[in-house]
Image: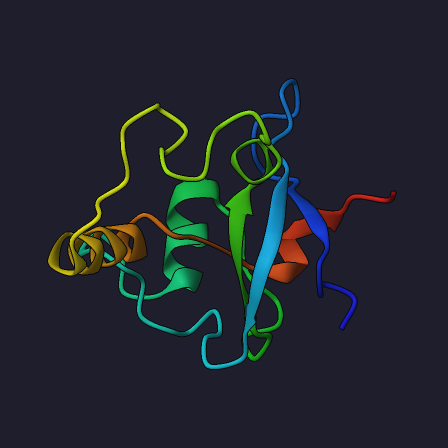
Length: 119
């Protein structure tokens, strides 16, 4: 529960410009052995091993579905446009397609590889 509504920072990424993410959902149906989206890696474990040289220790931990905080916390962007200023789709078919595309762009993080940002 410590990741519920938390802001996290992956410690293995660029430390000069740390990226903060809001935990949108704790995915109890996903763990480091789950299939990695895309065809380059079999699992999340393999992705972190090959891309960052990191061995995930706890392979049963649930994964975190996160949003980049700058997008989540930008209250200057009206709700009917995305953060690039493009109008959001209005028809249901377009909305479904946008949601599908969004799924592929999701950021999924491993809790043990993140630091929780203190408030």
